[in-house]
Image (cartoon, rainbow, N blue to C red):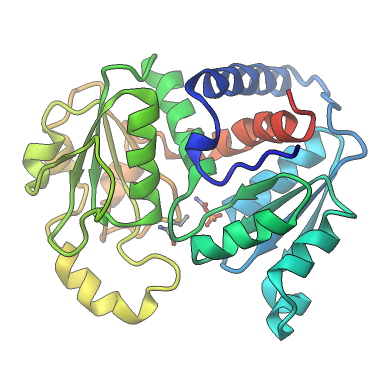
Length: 296
Ligand code: CP
Ligand code: NVA
Protein backbone atom coordinates (compact mmCIF):
# COMPACT_ATOMS: atom_id res chain seq x y z
CA UNK A 1 0.00 0.00 0.00
CA UNK A 2 1.34 3.41 -0.92
CA UNK A 3 1.34 6.14 1.65
CA UNK A 4 0.57 9.85 1.10
CA UNK A 5 1.69 12.98 2.93
CA UNK A 6 -1.27 15.33 2.51
CA UNK A 7 -1.23 16.68 6.05
CA UNK A 8 1.09 16.50 9.05
CA UNK A 9 -1.16 14.00 10.81
CA UNK A 10 -0.48 11.43 8.09
CA UNK A 11 2.63 10.70 10.19
CA UNK A 12 2.61 9.90 13.90
CA UNK A 13 4.70 11.89 16.38
CA UNK A 14 7.21 9.00 16.46
CA UNK A 15 7.41 8.97 12.66
CA UNK A 16 7.99 12.73 12.63
CA UNK A 17 10.81 12.29 15.15
CA UNK A 18 12.41 9.63 12.92
CA UNK A 19 12.01 11.93 9.90
CA UNK A 20 13.80 14.76 11.71
CA UNK A 21 16.61 12.41 12.81
CA UNK A 22 17.13 11.34 9.21
CA UNK A 23 16.94 14.97 7.99
CA UNK A 24 19.70 15.87 10.47
CA UNK A 25 21.85 13.00 9.16
CA UNK A 26 21.27 14.06 5.56
CA UNK A 27 22.06 17.70 6.36
CA UNK A 28 25.30 16.64 8.05
CA UNK A 29 26.21 14.35 5.14
CA UNK A 30 25.77 17.21 2.69
CA UNK A 31 27.88 19.47 4.89
CA UNK A 32 30.66 16.86 4.81
CA UNK A 33 30.37 16.64 1.03
CA UNK A 34 29.23 13.00 1.17
CA UNK A 35 27.16 11.69 -1.71
CA UNK A 36 23.99 9.84 -0.69
CA UNK A 37 22.31 7.88 -3.48
CA UNK A 38 19.36 6.26 -1.74
CA UNK A 39 16.92 7.34 -4.47
CA UNK A 40 19.06 6.47 -7.50
CA UNK A 41 16.85 5.65 -10.46
CA UNK A 42 13.72 7.10 -8.80
CA UNK A 43 11.61 9.85 -10.36
CA UNK A 44 9.51 12.53 -8.69
CA UNK A 45 6.75 14.45 -10.50
CA UNK A 46 6.21 18.06 -9.40
CA UNK A 47 2.77 19.25 -10.47
CA UNK A 48 2.12 22.97 -9.96
CA UNK A 49 -1.16 24.88 -10.21
CA UNK A 50 0.35 27.87 -8.43
CA UNK A 51 3.67 29.68 -8.57
CA UNK A 52 6.71 28.49 -6.63
CA UNK A 53 10.38 29.18 -6.07
CA UNK A 54 11.40 27.24 -2.94
CA UNK A 55 9.14 24.24 -3.35
CA UNK A 56 10.27 23.59 -6.89
CA UNK A 57 13.95 24.22 -6.16
CA UNK A 58 14.08 22.29 -2.91
CA UNK A 59 12.27 19.21 -4.25
CA UNK A 60 14.30 19.19 -7.48
CA UNK A 61 17.54 19.54 -5.52
CA UNK A 62 16.44 16.95 -2.93
CA UNK A 63 15.69 14.15 -5.38
CA UNK A 64 18.65 15.08 -7.58
CA UNK A 65 21.12 14.99 -4.69
CA UNK A 66 19.77 11.58 -3.66
CA UNK A 67 20.51 10.23 -7.13
CA UNK A 68 17.02 10.48 -8.62
CA UNK A 69 15.41 12.95 -10.99
CA UNK A 70 12.44 15.31 -11.07
CA UNK A 71 9.93 16.11 -13.79
CA UNK A 72 8.33 19.50 -13.24
CA UNK A 73 4.96 20.01 -14.90
CA UNK A 74 3.30 23.41 -14.60
CA UNK A 75 -0.46 22.97 -14.95
CA UNK A 76 -0.77 25.24 -17.99
CA UNK A 77 1.56 22.94 -19.94
CA UNK A 78 -0.34 19.77 -19.04
CA UNK A 79 -3.52 18.27 -20.45
CA UNK A 80 -5.23 19.07 -17.13
CA UNK A 81 -5.58 22.66 -18.30
CA UNK A 82 -7.43 21.29 -21.35
CA UNK A 83 -9.83 19.25 -19.27
CA UNK A 84 -8.10 15.92 -18.60
CA UNK A 85 -9.23 14.64 -15.22
CA UNK A 86 -7.05 14.53 -12.12
CA UNK A 87 -7.99 10.86 -11.81
CA UNK A 88 -6.55 9.98 -15.23
CA UNK A 89 -3.52 12.19 -14.60
CA UNK A 90 -2.78 10.53 -11.26
CA UNK A 91 -3.25 7.01 -12.62
CA UNK A 92 -1.07 7.60 -15.69
CA UNK A 93 1.67 9.49 -13.82
CA UNK A 94 1.90 6.57 -11.39
CA UNK A 95 3.05 4.36 -14.29
CA UNK A 96 6.08 6.65 -14.85
CA UNK A 97 7.14 8.07 -11.50
CA UNK A 98 7.76 6.93 -7.91
CA UNK A 99 6.08 9.87 -6.14
CA UNK A 100 4.03 12.96 -6.99
CA UNK A 101 4.14 16.36 -5.33
CA UNK A 102 1.06 18.46 -6.03
CA UNK A 103 0.54 22.20 -5.35
CA UNK A 104 -3.08 23.16 -5.79
CA UNK A 105 -6.07 25.15 -4.52
CA UNK A 106 -8.84 23.10 -2.86
CA UNK A 107 -7.97 20.05 -0.80
CA UNK A 108 -10.63 18.15 -2.74
CA UNK A 109 -8.31 18.32 -5.77
CA UNK A 110 -5.40 17.02 -3.74
CA UNK A 111 -7.44 14.11 -2.44
CA UNK A 112 -8.82 13.30 -5.89
CA UNK A 113 -5.31 13.01 -7.31
CA UNK A 114 -4.15 11.00 -4.29
CA UNK A 115 -7.06 8.56 -4.66
CA UNK A 116 -6.17 7.83 -8.28
CA UNK A 117 -2.40 7.68 -7.84
CA UNK A 118 -0.83 4.35 -6.91
CA UNK A 119 2.38 6.12 -5.80
CA UNK A 120 2.74 8.46 -2.79
CA UNK A 121 1.30 11.97 -3.18
CA UNK A 122 2.79 14.89 -1.24
CA UNK A 123 0.90 18.11 -0.56
CA UNK A 124 3.16 20.90 -1.83
CA UNK A 125 0.68 23.55 -0.57
CA UNK A 126 -3.10 23.64 -0.80
CA UNK A 127 -5.75 25.98 0.57
CA UNK A 128 -5.94 23.75 3.65
CA UNK A 129 -2.27 23.56 4.58
CA UNK A 130 1.42 23.60 3.75
CA UNK A 131 2.70 20.54 5.63
CA UNK A 132 6.13 20.27 3.98
CA UNK A 133 6.80 23.87 5.00
CA UNK A 134 5.83 23.02 8.57
CA UNK A 135 8.30 20.13 8.56
CA UNK A 136 11.03 22.66 7.78
CA UNK A 137 9.71 25.17 10.31
CA UNK A 138 9.51 22.65 13.16
CA UNK A 139 12.92 21.23 12.27
CA UNK A 140 14.36 24.77 12.35
CA UNK A 141 12.86 25.47 15.77
CA UNK A 142 14.38 22.25 17.14
CA UNK A 143 17.72 23.06 15.55
CA UNK A 144 17.80 26.57 17.05
CA UNK A 145 15.97 26.13 20.37
CA UNK A 146 15.87 22.40 21.16
CA UNK A 147 12.75 20.33 21.79
CA UNK A 148 9.42 21.85 20.77
CA UNK A 149 7.67 20.59 23.89
CA UNK A 150 6.59 23.50 26.09
CA UNK A 151 7.65 26.21 23.62
CA UNK A 152 5.38 29.17 22.87
CA UNK A 153 4.84 29.90 19.19
CA UNK A 154 2.94 33.03 18.19
CA UNK A 155 1.34 33.34 14.78
CA UNK A 156 0.60 36.92 13.72
CA UNK A 157 -1.48 37.72 10.62
CA UNK A 158 -3.87 35.65 8.52
CA UNK A 159 -5.13 33.05 10.97
CA UNK A 160 -7.17 31.28 8.29
CA UNK A 161 -4.30 30.82 5.84
CA UNK A 162 -2.83 27.49 4.79
CA UNK A 163 0.25 28.16 6.93
CA UNK A 164 -1.78 29.03 10.04
CA UNK A 165 -3.90 25.89 9.58
CA UNK A 166 -0.78 23.74 9.41
CA UNK A 167 0.64 25.40 12.55
CA UNK A 168 -2.62 24.50 14.33
CA UNK A 169 -2.21 20.89 13.24
CA UNK A 170 1.43 20.95 14.36
CA UNK A 171 0.58 22.25 17.85
CA UNK A 172 -1.64 19.20 18.42
CA UNK A 173 1.02 16.76 17.24
CA UNK A 174 4.09 18.35 18.84
CA UNK A 175 2.52 19.67 22.06
CA UNK A 176 3.69 23.25 22.10
CA UNK A 177 1.60 26.30 22.93
CA UNK A 178 0.27 28.11 19.87
CA UNK A 179 -1.12 31.62 20.09
CA UNK A 180 -2.89 33.03 17.06
CA UNK A 181 -3.29 36.76 16.66
CA UNK A 182 -5.47 37.69 13.69
CA UNK A 183 -8.09 40.33 12.96
CA UNK A 184 -11.76 39.42 13.01
CA UNK A 185 -12.82 37.70 9.80
CA UNK A 186 -9.37 36.12 9.41
CA UNK A 187 -9.38 33.77 12.37
CA UNK A 188 -9.37 29.97 12.10
CA UNK A 189 -12.90 28.69 11.67
CA UNK A 190 -12.02 25.19 12.76
CA UNK A 191 -9.56 23.40 14.97
CA UNK A 192 -8.67 23.53 18.62
CA UNK A 193 -5.53 23.48 20.68
CA UNK A 194 -4.56 27.11 20.13
CA UNK A 195 -5.15 30.35 22.03
CA UNK A 196 -6.74 33.21 20.17
CA UNK A 197 -5.18 36.50 21.33
CA UNK A 198 -6.58 39.47 19.42
CA UNK A 199 -3.89 41.98 20.41
CA UNK A 200 -0.60 41.00 18.73
CA UNK A 201 1.40 42.73 21.49
CA UNK A 202 -0.18 40.43 24.08
CA UNK A 203 0.17 37.41 21.82
CA UNK A 204 3.91 37.89 21.32
CA UNK A 205 4.70 38.44 25.02
CA UNK A 206 7.24 35.82 26.15
CA UNK A 207 7.09 33.86 22.88
CA UNK A 208 9.94 31.55 21.79
CA UNK A 209 8.98 31.74 18.12
CA UNK A 210 7.20 34.51 16.24
CA UNK A 211 5.94 33.63 12.80
CA UNK A 212 3.85 35.18 10.06
CA UNK A 213 3.05 34.91 6.36
CA UNK A 214 1.83 37.11 3.53
CA UNK A 215 -1.50 38.87 3.97
CA UNK A 216 -2.51 38.01 0.42
CA UNK A 217 -2.02 34.36 -0.44
CA UNK A 218 -1.92 33.00 -3.97
CA UNK A 219 -5.43 33.16 -5.42
CA UNK A 220 -6.54 36.03 -3.14
CA UNK A 221 -5.19 38.85 -5.30
CA UNK A 222 -8.66 40.37 -5.83
CA UNK A 223 -9.03 40.86 -2.06
CA UNK A 224 -5.69 42.67 -1.77
CA UNK A 225 -6.98 46.13 -0.79
CA UNK A 226 -9.44 44.84 1.81
CA UNK A 227 -6.83 42.50 3.27
CA UNK A 228 -4.16 45.22 3.56
CA UNK A 229 -6.69 47.33 5.46
CA UNK A 230 -7.76 44.49 7.77
CA UNK A 231 -4.20 43.45 8.63
CA UNK A 232 -2.84 46.93 9.38
CA UNK A 233 -1.49 46.67 12.93
CA UNK A 234 -0.42 43.03 12.45
CA UNK A 235 3.07 43.71 11.11
CA UNK A 236 5.89 41.83 12.85
CA UNK A 237 8.24 44.75 13.44
CA UNK A 238 10.97 45.57 15.94
CA UNK A 239 8.53 47.01 18.52
CA UNK A 240 6.38 43.87 18.43
CA UNK A 241 9.35 41.50 18.54
CA UNK A 242 10.81 43.30 21.57
CA UNK A 243 7.97 41.76 23.62
CA UNK A 244 9.06 38.19 22.80
CA UNK A 245 11.78 36.32 24.71
CA UNK A 246 15.29 37.71 24.08
CA UNK A 247 16.16 34.28 22.61
CA UNK A 248 13.10 34.25 20.32
CA UNK A 249 13.49 33.42 16.65
CA UNK A 250 11.42 34.66 13.72
CA UNK A 251 10.12 32.41 10.97
CA UNK A 252 8.48 33.21 7.63
CA UNK A 253 7.91 30.61 4.91
CA UNK A 254 8.69 33.21 2.20
CA UNK A 255 8.07 34.90 -0.16
CA UNK A 256 7.84 37.95 2.13
CA UNK A 257 6.58 41.50 1.66
CA UNK A 258 8.85 43.75 3.68
CA UNK A 259 6.85 46.61 5.18
CA UNK A 260 3.58 44.63 5.10
CA UNK A 261 3.43 41.52 7.30
CA UNK A 262 7.07 41.91 8.47
CA UNK A 263 9.55 44.77 8.67
CA UNK A 264 12.86 44.64 6.82
CA UNK A 265 14.66 45.11 10.15
CA UNK A 266 13.09 41.95 11.56
CA UNK A 267 13.30 39.62 8.58
CA UNK A 268 16.87 40.68 7.80
CA UNK A 269 17.83 41.00 11.46
CA UNK A 270 19.73 38.75 13.90
CA UNK A 271 16.68 36.87 15.19
CA UNK A 272 15.45 35.87 11.78
CA UNK A 273 15.89 32.18 10.93
CA UNK A 274 14.26 32.41 7.51
CA UNK A 275 17.26 31.33 5.43
CA UNK A 276 17.88 28.23 7.57
CA UNK A 277 14.15 27.60 7.37
CA UNK A 278 14.25 27.78 3.56
CA UNK A 279 17.35 25.55 3.40
CA UNK A 280 15.79 23.02 5.74
CA UNK A 281 12.95 22.49 3.26
CA UNK A 282 15.42 20.46 1.21
CA UNK A 283 16.74 18.37 4.09
CA UNK A 284 13.34 17.42 5.52
CA UNK A 285 11.96 16.70 2.05
CA UNK A 286 14.87 14.34 1.36
CA UNK A 287 13.93 12.43 4.51
CA UNK A 288 10.26 12.52 3.50
CA UNK A 289 10.96 11.22 -0.02
CA UNK A 290 13.04 8.37 1.39
CA UNK A 291 10.31 7.54 3.92
CA UNK A 292 7.56 7.45 1.29
CA UNK A 293 9.41 5.93 -1.67
CA UNK A 294 11.54 3.42 0.24
CA UNK A 295 8.87 2.94 2.96
CA UNK A 296 11.46 3.55 5.66
N1 CP B 1 7.58 28.68 1.06
C1 CP B 1 7.24 28.23 -0.17
O1 CP B 1 6.52 27.23 -0.32
O2 CP B 1 7.77 28.96 -1.19
P1 CP B 1 7.41 28.86 -2.74
O3 CP B 1 6.01 29.37 -2.92
O4 CP B 1 8.43 29.72 -3.40
O5 CP B 1 7.51 27.43 -3.17
N1 NVA C 1 0.11 31.50 2.28
C1 NVA C 1 0.99 31.62 1.13
C2 NVA C 1 2.16 30.71 1.28
C3 NVA C 1 3.15 30.77 0.16
C4 NVA C 1 4.28 29.79 0.32
C5 NVA C 1 0.21 31.32 -0.14
O1 NVA C 1 -0.59 30.37 -0.14
O2 NVA C 1 0.39 32.05 -1.12
